[in-house]
Amino acid sequence: MLKFPIYLDYSATTPVDPRVAQAMIPWLTEHFGNPASRSHAYGWEAEKAVEDAREQVAALVNADPKEIVWTSGATESNNLAIKGAAQFYKGKGKHIITVKTEHKAVLDTFRELERQGFEATYLDVQENGLIDLAAFKDALRPDTILVSVMFVNNEIGVIQPIAEIGEICREKGITFHVDAAQATGKVEIDLQKLKVDLMSFSAHKTYGPKGIGALYVRRKPRARLEAQMHGGGHERGLRSGTLATHQIVGMGEAFRIAREEMAVENERVRMLRDRLLKGLQDIEATYVNGDLEQRVPHNLNISFAYVEGESMIMAVKDIAVSSGSACTSASLEPSYVLRALGRNDELAHSSIRFSIGRFTTEEEIDYTIDLMHKKIGKLRELSPLWEMVQEGVDLNTVQWAAH
Amino acid sequence: MAYSEKVLDHYENPRNVGAFSKDDDGVGTGMVGAPACGDVMKLQIKVGKDGVIEDAKFKTYGCGSAIASSSLVTEWVKGKTVEQALEIKNTQIAEELALPPVKIHCSILAEDAIKAAVADYKKKHEG
Image (cartoon, rainbow over all chains, first blue to last red; front, side, top):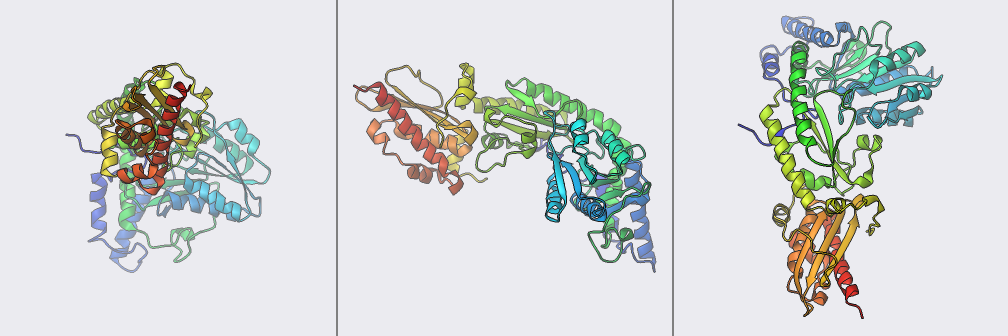
């Protein structure tokens, strides 16, 4: 039995795994103690639950539990890492580097630092969505203090060359932050090998609850930060605020499941993604956005030419997907990520991000393929642009009546 | 985005989709808008010897409101003379479809499409 709309938006958020929800419940009702209470058993048991979860999170990324700081999510982790490191090292330099296709939580934080007097470089990406290491090296300056690059892109799923960037940063003594919100449970992360100083995590992208995340802060060599949240000195002073035991337990359980099941799960997801890709590539004039090899199997971002974005979203209401629409109609913002790939706006295409996850079935994929064939066919039947292309007209040579 | 029932009806069941031969003497073709703006409408009218519009067809690249606006005008122009068709105003289209303010441009484009189609027809019949 299919349930509508079919959920293919796992990159936006994931359902909480039922095992995670079960693990969380006792920490809301029976075991409600404050983990910071040192004087009684309620506090002790909560503290133990928090520390067990810290080990589970650290285990997924091969880190020391002491290197994990709880936050409210990846946005807060990104803010703490980027502002915290920039402010700590501001005496050393004022230049910071990131990439144009980063999440807004990184880009807007960089903008804020620019207002505070830092100088930022926003690197372009290549047509496949990956950064060019030579261009990255050229952007480095003697006063560069911080580099922030995401592990897996949220819109197109491409995997940036984190290991290589880490080598370059370590050699030059530059703090390297990685937003790994979209990476946990999808790619192997080994922080013993990767030369990353700070890494942001989120629970809700990996079948945990919303409102909880973590920041990895390397101990050897030690990454230094200025706290952004002040108060009771929790989390070794890096992030004050009473710890949300149930949320933390949920994140720990979610990351434990991810570690144990990701190898098998990723193969199943890859099979579904390939099935979807094959089915959609049968539709004429479609193309994949972002590199297909350096990419997590969970993501498929496809453009359908000669179809307008908003009408396409109306047409596919049976599936819950995101539109990284490259159209310019009034109500849909053009995707800055797709623009950064250098996609031609004039081609008038619309794109859909399909993201597949733990509970996606083959039946759902097959329904989606069939739906897309019908709806894209119908919209092209209606499209004067498609008619002109069929007649052999080059749309770039047409003089459009501006309005 | 919440669409009115009339917009949804025209979007789900667009009237008079298709094309006439542009070379037909009685056919006027109007194409307005640009892909970069997110809307392109092509409206065609087939005019009888008595100057009455016998049939109309459209194709539209655009949002649901743009599709509905053009679908609606193909119904409205039928049975009118070309001069009467020119009297159709965007405000009437917007009112009939209950278009929200951000979608008024769709009705303006539909009015422009009528004007362009009539102008093309008249050009063929000049002198």
